[in-house]
Each structure stands twice: as structure tokens, then as C-alpha cells.
Length: 281
Image 1 (spheres, rainbow, N blue to C red):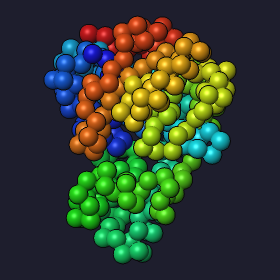
Image 2 (image 1 turned 180 degrees about the vertical axis):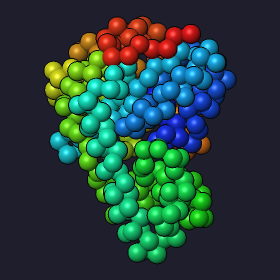
Image 3 (image 1 turned 90 degrees about the vertical axis):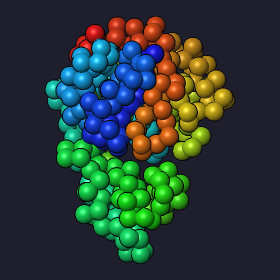
Image 4 (image 1 turned 60 degrees about the vertical axis):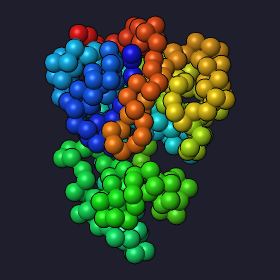
């Protein structure tokens, strides 16, 4: 039971890293990756909890990138967090989330929504990577909506009137940076049906040339056609196929282990890495 895509409260999940690992163990996972958005601040706490629960930890992050003007999420595994070029880009992406979110809050407040910047900050763990989910949680806390998903469906999706872009490194460059940092880049949910489809076959080929190692195949936002297309591209380019939950705690209905990664895929990821080693217990 290997789940290679989860989020803690260090970004837009609702559980502290240690609680995330405890839940992973309770769910029967043998290996779990922590992949918070543009940050590695949960790694140390997760590693300590993984040792306590006997769960193997794969340290990673989900990077905010952009390709041909479209938002693309890139999972990065086992990279050196001290690598300066990659760390610089992650800091830049994370820092730009703050003014972007402030602009969204101001526009919604101007339109009569019961929300303030202080309300949003009340939903954020100290040191966490800020994002739209924290605004969604503030709106839920203020009784504007019943759940985070409702807020995104109505007001915060990428095509909404309140959408604001934030800085994101080009996907090709992000792939190169992750590889240079000893890490393993895997494209996340590229054919999701619930959001803007981020890539086509030619785009994937371009990323393979840059050093892409894997593609997330089994994800709840991929329909049967999306999964089949991802498997076809994985076979064509010898990419590592993965599957995962994209768990966010109570922030989404995704459940730990609802999609999993084969052991041979994890072995290929580990073999391709030279940044940090997994914590194996």
C-alpha cells in the first residue's frame, strides 16, 4: 500500500504532518509521500512520526508550475532541499501566494462576502504555504458555504471571476531544476476532468526531453479515458506510472490509499533519485 501524493497543514491539508502519518498507518499504508505545495517544512515532523509508526516516508513537494499559460502541478520526490536554485524558485512561488490571496480576499469582500484577511490567517498554521483553500476554509467558518469544495465549485475555480494567477516557474524549467537537485519529477493529474486539462501528448514529450521521470495515472480526477491515455504515454516514453490519493484531510473527500502506486514504480523512483534517501523502516 503505497500512496505518493498527500498534503498536510503545512500547505492546504488539514492535518499536521505527524497526524497525517498516523492516519496513513491506520489506513494500512506501508509507504506514504508528503507532498505539500512548494514547501518542505513538514518533512522533519513527518519523518519522526514515520519512524514511530513504522511507515516508510518518501519526502517530496508539489510544485506550482506553468506550461503554455496553463497551471501544471509537478510532484517532486527525494530532492535535496538545500539545492539553491530549486529552493529559490520554491521560495518565490510560496511568497507570491500571499499578495495573490490578499487580492482575492479584497475583491470578494468588496463584493459583499463575509470574509477578511484576518479570517483567512486564522485558518493557516504558522509557516504554512498559503493558498485558496485557506480562503475557502475562512468562508466555511463564516457560514458562507458548507464545505471547501462548494467554495471552489462556485467562486474559486480557475475560470471564476475571482481567479488570480500567482508566480509559477515554467514546467520544463521545474523538471530540470528537480533533476539537478537530485530529485524525481512526476507530473500530477495531467488529465483531470474537474479542472483545466493541463497537458497533451506533445507537452508530455517535451517534458520527457527535459527529464520527466513519471506520470500520475491513477487519481480520482482522471476518468477512465484519462487513465488510459496516461498509461499509453507512460508506456510510450518509459515513464514511471504512479497512483495516489491527493489526500487533504478534511479539506477534500479524497481518502488515503484510494489509489496506490505499485512497488516496482516506487523502486524506479528511488533508483532515479540522488538528492535524499527515503526513510525506510
